[in-house]
Image 1 (spheres, rainbow, N blue to C red):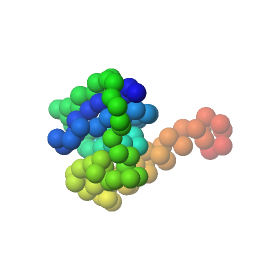
Image 2 (image 1 turned 90 degrees about the vertical axis):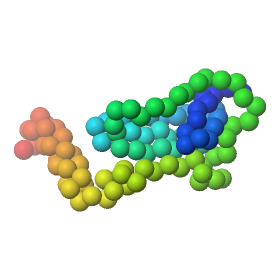
Image 3 (image 1 turned 180 degrees about the horizontal axis):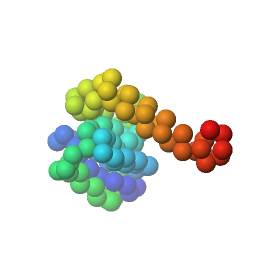
Image 4 (image 1 turned 60 degrees about the vertical axis):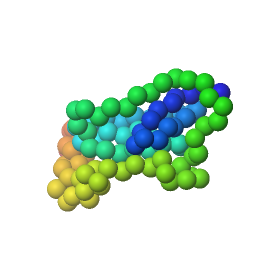
Length: 105
């Protein structure tokens, strides 16, 4: 089989299926059934990905939570009341534009 090989926190991962990346001004994340990373976005995050052949994939997260990495700074951010209100305001403004465009408000 082939897929993506990567190394995170000094551990090798072999991922044969879908990987989803997310990056914005707050969050960097990689999500798969084999590895999950959540960090604050910042310059200098490095992640080497190689398309490669391998015999066996890594263990799935459902089998073993060793592949789940949630950065402490990220955890603190998403549990911050200020961040929650900021995200709610962004959502309000997004919906306000739609409602004005439709003539509802």
